[in-house]
Image (cartoon, rainbow, N blue to C red; front, side, top):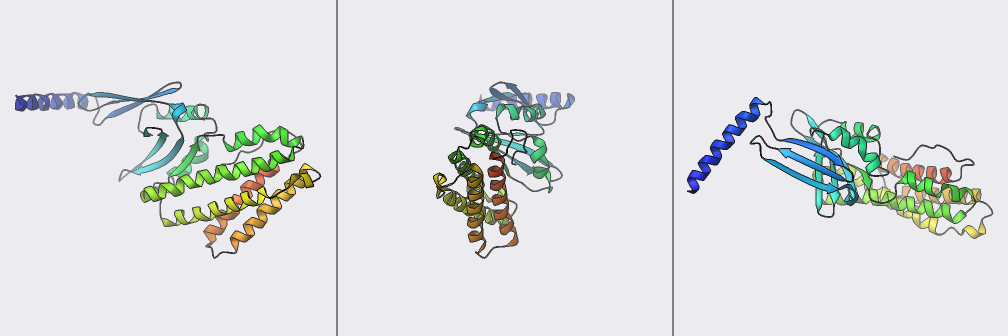
Length: 278
């Protein structure tokens, strides 16, 4: 009886494969659909067997982008971390473009594809693993949320925003650092792993120095800004005394420059548009 069932199943699969080929389908077809806040991924195999998986976008804690090397071409993928594990989608799936356009509204703070797509695509045949979004307030939202209060001379707010920014950046780089330890194939080479460490060190050093500022002894918000930038530069100089490669030095200076941008943006004289950090 088992043999008969196996033969019948084989005959059905062969027939369905011929049917799929006649319809122009030679591999499993995936379709992404959005019914906020639910994302559904439907699939149909060449044997015309259907499957479906759904998840709530509000359950996403981390979103990353990377490429899979398919020998002759690359395939850009997005992966979402959920409490139950990871869900992956890719550019070959129907509805991927619509999902990409919707993520900015579905995940507040998710960067527009113009800001990261090229960096994931180039160079070719490399994973180019990139953390795009983590659960919590984004940097641009963080600045916007606190900007009015800081301009009203609430000096402690500026220091708090700067420290919270350090924490956001630390969380971002720590995720990549931990991912390397789990699966080293996510990184192009060990160099990416090594330049994350100085970033983590300088962010912690700047956070520690910011914590030491006594805003009650400063006469104006501008004084607070200058003090904050001064301690960040001091912390950076300490980090630069260690033996470092030119790439590691550039990474440290980039983190300081970004933090100085946050501090300066908070105390602009007028509310208005500003460039969010990448």
